[in-house]
Image (cartoon, rainbow, N blue to C red; front, side, top):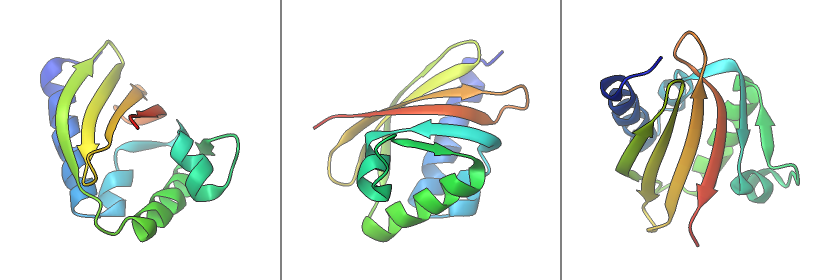
Length: 119
């Protein structure tokens, strides 16, 4: 079970890792068996499923994304938490808003992500 303090710290650490463009630090938040679903996957990987499976594949996807958006920077707007999940609501350097629903495994690592974007 997650509590507010844990989720807020997770969000701060996750945002800081992204803003540092430190892929290893970003990936440290994810389980080996992670699944990510995002419309950006369709754009970046040309994969109509919009799904990335596994930590290694996720790292490759993130690396490609940073290659396309080398000025990428996130600003945390809000954090919501549940028993084993969280939603990070943030905006990027272009002003696009994102909400990522994340489920956590028993070890506190993200096992599932569903990303949603504003226009």
